[in-house]
Length: 148
Image (cartoon, rainbow, N blue to C red; front, side, top):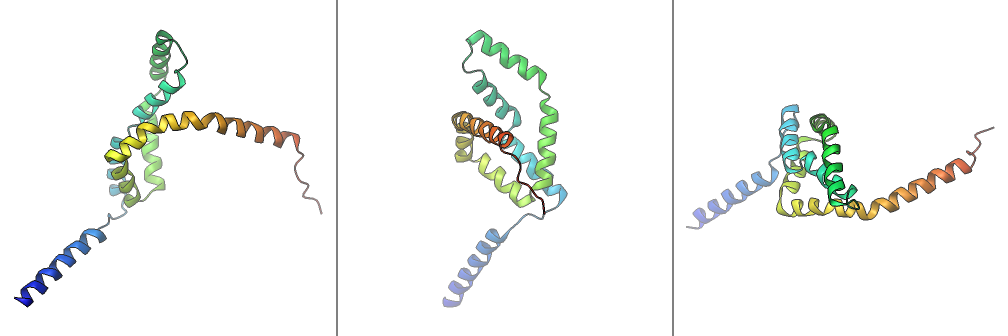
C-alpha cells in the first residue's frame, strides 16, 4: 500500500512538473501561430474603433458618426494588421506572444483592454504637453559643445 501511494505521488509530481515546464519552441511557425492568437484576442480594428470613439467624443452625434465612417474608410486595416503581426513575430518569442495572447484573451485581460482607451485619453494630454515643452526647451537651449 505504501509503495502504491508513493508511486501515485511520484507520478502526480512528474506530470504536474511537466505541465509547468512545458514551453513552446521558438520557431517561426510557433511565433506566427501565437501572433494569430494574440491578434484574435486584441483585434487591431477594435483598438482603432475605440480610438476613433475617443477622438470623436466632443463632436455632435451626426458629425461623430460621419467622422468615424470616413476615418475607417481611409484606413487600410489589413496593412496595419499585417505590419503588427510581422512586428510581433520579429520582436517577441513564441512563449512571450503566447503569454500576451493568454492574458489579453482572458476575462481580466479583456476587461483591462476595454479600459485602455479611457486611460490613454486621460494621460495623452499630459504626454503631449510635456513632449511639446521638451521640444521647446531643446530649441531654446543651445546644444552642449563637444569641443576640445
